Length: 291
Length: 187
Image (cartoon, rainbow over all chains, first blue to last red; front, side):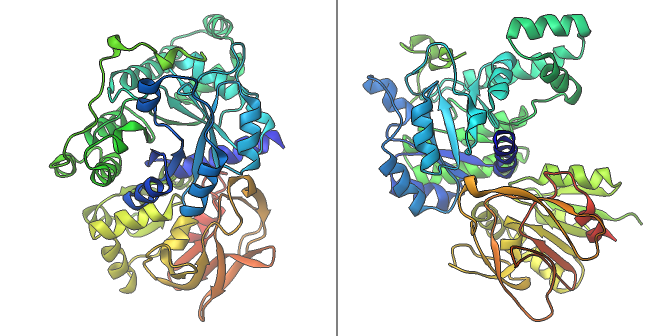
C-alpha cells in the first residue's frame, strides 16, 4: 500500500507544522524535549557535533535506545538511517518508528541510490540543498523535506542558503515555458509532471522544515520568517549551557516568530548557545552527501 | 456582519483548516494571542501535538480566555484530533492538561504509532455523502457524557461527537480537503 503510506506520512507531517523536532540521545533528554514543547524527537546515539568531533562511521542507532525513548514519550519518535541503507530502514519500520530520516548526518551506505521509500509503511523525511534534490527525494517517496543546512555546526548560514535557494528556484519556474521546464526536468532528473505541479502551486508538495545549524531562538525565528514550516534542532539544544531553557525558548520563537517583543523575551538570559564552527574550517561538509 | 472563524495557530495543521474554510467562502483568522481571539466569532482547535498546544495555551493565558468565552456561550468550537484531546473533560492517562469544555474522556494515540494511521470514508449523521477522514496517530473517545451526542462511529467507537456549541472529532478532514464537517460547524 505504498501511495497510501506516503499520503498518511504527509498527513502526519502536517500535524508537526509550526513545531520543533529535537535531537535526543537518551530517555532523559527525550523527556526534557517533550516537556519543553517539542512536537517530535529524533532519537540518536550521537548528535551531529559529536559525530564531527569523534569521526568514524556513523550508523543507525541501537534500536534499544529508540525503543526506550518510544516508551518514555507520547510525541512522535523519529530516527535516522544511512542514505541508501534499506536494511536499516526495514529495522526501523519493524520497530514502528513514526518517521525515518534518511540522513546525510550518518555515513552514506549506497553511493548510487537513495532508499525506494514508497515501499515502506513508515514515512520518510529527507534532506535537500536545492529544488532538484528535494524533488528527487519526493519522487522516491519522501513525505517530508528538511533543508540540510550544515549539521552540527551551530552556524545557521547554510540553512538560510538552502531555504532561500529552494524558494528562488520555485520562483524561477514561473517564468519557464514548457520547453524550458522540460529541459530543467531532464537536467535535474525529475518528472515534468512533478515540476509542473510545483510551478503551479508555487511550493513543494510536502511539508518543508529547516535543519542544520539552528542554535538560538533568533535562528529559528529567522528561518520561520523565510517560509520554513517548522524546525529541526540537533546539537543546538543539548550542547547549550541550559538545555531546558534553550529548548523552551526555541519552541516559543518558532511559534511567535513574527512577534518581536516575544522574541526579545524568550531570547533574554538563556546562557551560552553552542559554540559553533565556521563553515570553511570544516573537514566534512555533510550537505554534499547524497545529492 | 460576516462571521470570522478563528483557527488556533500555535502549532499543527492550522493552515489546512484555513484552506478548507476559504474553499467554502468563510473568513478566517490565525489565533496566537488573547487579542487575536477577541476578533473571532468561532474557533477551530486544529490537529497537531496536544502536549505542545496545551503547554503554549496554558503558558499564555489564551487557554483561560478560550474557556471563559466558551462558557459564556460566545464561542462555538470545532476541535480535531489533538484539539479534541484539549477540549475533553479528561485524558485517560492524565498526560495532558485540558480545557475540559466537553464531557468526554479521550485516550491518546489509541490506534498505535504512525504505521497504524489510516484514511477511510465515514458515515456522519446530518451529512449526506460519506466524509473523507484521515486518522493520524488518532485518539479514542472512551467515554461520552450526558448531553453529548455521537455523530459518527468507526469500529463501533465514537469518532465525532457534538454538544451545545461544540463539535469534536478524532480525525482530520482538513487534510483530505472534505469541507462537509466545516460546513456543519459554520451553519
